[in-house]
Image (cartoon, rainbow, N blue to C red):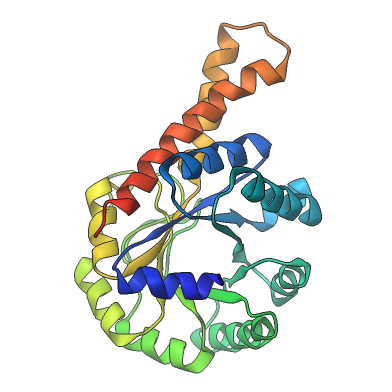
Length: 274
């Protein structure tokens, strides 16, 4: 099933799907073990940094083979693609979905590059996600400015034909200085003004009830990245402080198990929304 068709089914039921980044075999294994144990579909995401680290064909084939090995329904998505060329490369090699993130460019330029990617993706039958509004990235101020405007979202979707739209309603990438407060009324207005899949970036650290309420009001795809990296690395650091083991095959599984438990909890939140 194409991802855009899966989105339609989920939206009709007011349900969501978790989209998780992975960084190596261990984090991928943790995500997929969690999805398998909860019998939930998953979107596996790769950023430019992860692609550069692992290599594009290696990362893609690892994800595909692991999905098949675990018997998990899933899709592979380019997260925060920053150029048309990267999106094109990912589509050509077999990604199910790509994000073109031109949200920091002027509105008309965001429309132009997104439209170009959408046109290309149609020949592959692939899903395209874009971003509109200001969702703070790592190192940027989280001052709450630049939230997505419902009518501007409507205009953007109609002009580009994009399948999914990441909206700014109070989340941010990375860790939060204080508990995020989502603008759920704005989300309802955006959902009423558009007919696309709405995406919540910055899912790490958002309280479970806020995530449930967001899905109930129109969010379909929830992104999770920072918490995965953090729990994996913190677990390793704690383990290595009291362990002189040099066999990484005995050390890494401890961190992988923590990723499994983290992602299982997030998947339960998504599944519990009716």
